Length: 336
Image (tube, rainbow, N blue to C red):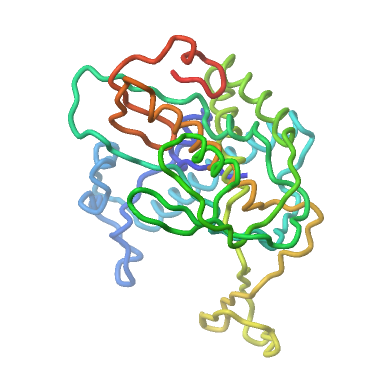
């Protein structure tokens, strides 16, 4: 589960009583750790200065402890609220230990959205945004099961040249069916999966319904759950753990990535294994499919006859003319 927002934004969106504090990050150094004096206002971020009170007895030690306390309490309350919501909905405990599998699919097929500017100037244009694009894409057929032996890789040619890369087969089919000049010259390698269309159906439909019909923290949580699951599929695995031990407890036979001496202690990074989980929590194939379906959906609006496209990004377009009314609604995947 990812919480893809700053701590301050999460506090606001989830209506947490604890708020992230403000701190002069560039002020502390080895010579002033016990500083007590006028507030070091010049060391606060420019946008934070209006929230900072200037006093004559500002204590670096006290302010550091207060700042860290607020951060920890805010984060604790956010995680508690998220975990409670997940448990009430799915009876799942997010504090259960997790371990990640190896990535069987080449990461080359995992692309994000595109940002393109086709016309640099326009007047009286129409801006549209897709309702929850990635959750909408997650309702499509997904690659599941254990992949069969590698088959081949795709190579494309366009009017501007040729290249080779990994693509979801559905995206290649869509490119060919668009009749804009794409041609597959050779299939070099690939990975074949089973097809399943119901992996995320209940999850997406339930949380989208909550998002549409709720307000405040409940709506923000539903939106967070919708948008963060996709990121979980494609997250880069953490391949090490850090331990802090006394030097006398050091085992020289450990496989060590890095070590830092801190007086009589050691801060050590150790490699860890991600082959223990029975249920994979990362799947580059699914992440790649989600982004591919998302690109396919937004591409439909790039070549509408007699409606020039000025700009597109991951989930929005700017067009010369209005879209048909049947494409605009609160429905998942429609425009707004």
